[in-house]
Image (cartoon, rainbow, N blue to C red; front, side, top):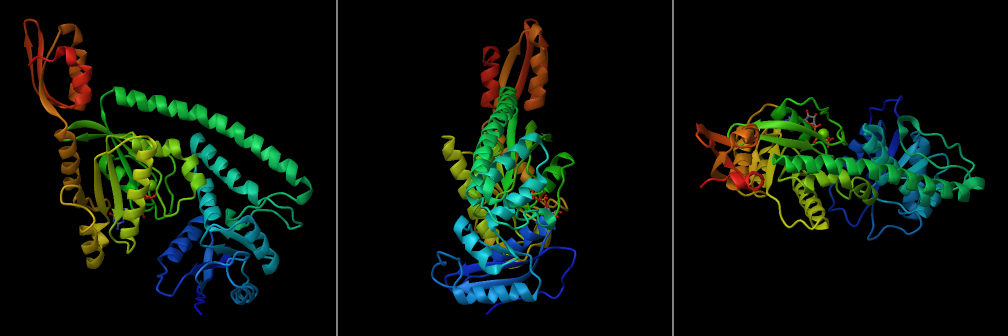
Length: 429
Ligand SMILES: Nc1nc2c(ncn2[C@@H]2O[C@H](COP(=O)(O)OP(=O)(O)OP(=O)(O)O)[C@@H](O)[C@H]2O)c(=O)[nH]1
Ligand SMILES: [Mg+2]
């Protein structure tokens, strides 16, 4: 038996037991550690863990009868308010479990993540995305019960309304979802227009993606002096932020911070956040950030690569240049560092610390290498009336020379295909 009741218990925070089922005892507890961090981010505390080893979860109550008795005892003994299962429970499992456990709220990992998202969304788009995901998740789980249905402290585990109104409430929620989706579509259109404008400007677009809490926002702040909230919490960033970043040789680019990934990201969230995640798909270069101080760097890598590939596939995009940014080198442990070395190749991986700035030069070089690999030195002859294009060239490319000649302005610059396309009538080679 593995019940770890932590000694430090803060009475002002809601207490929870974390529950998991593993097929055998070879499973490590990193997933439960992550669940504990999620709970902490949501404003709760894990005071105990209950793990059952069995080949498959129980259909009715997820854990078996004996474990269930143990859980009940634990809840009563330690004044537990919340039990969190590290999985997605079916509506009937939640019902069975709550009926058995009495005055304890039962939620699953998805519900916990949805709650965190609800607390962290700040823009209209983010708020709508989360509302839709939560409502869709809630509908099948709505049930009538005489229980007090207020939110638990810290906002974890909301429950629906009472039985008598159940069916009409479900209908009402569906209408509400349709309304929210309509509003979200308007905002998505706006985001698409902004993206198109950026694309048409010919400026290279870079996105920063990766597992939650690996240091994406810290990196963007380091590179651009942006002032994005970066903190030791999961899903601190939900809304993409775009900033200009000026590179020494390749000129000005734009770089966008994005919502973090997590293993088994609830599909309601992927659907709801698809326009936000599209920032990754439509960028020219993707920086995938990983945390080399975490023993989970391998699974961070797997989750990130898989999610990015499925996003690209969904949009029919074949391939994108990716640079793997192994971050937090300042506190990396040797073994994990070694393992990370095996994940990238020499050409597409850099090791940095966004916190101290160490290695950031190598990232700049790697990004420039990708940009300049698709850029070519090109000579333009611009008519005097089109002198404004020189400004575009300075912003997006490295301008090598500008010479005023009789029939116009001769500019030699290192430009990519986009700019060459835009200015093709002035190419003079
Ligand atoms: N030691 C160390 N800590 C870092 C480094 N980069 C980021 N951190 C810390 O890691 C935590 C998470 O950083 P964020 O930049 O918020 O991470 P994120 O990937 O944007 O996280 P989400 O937006 O929540 O997905 C913060 O406490 C940072 O101070 C680093 O290079 N070294
Ligand atoms: Mg962030």
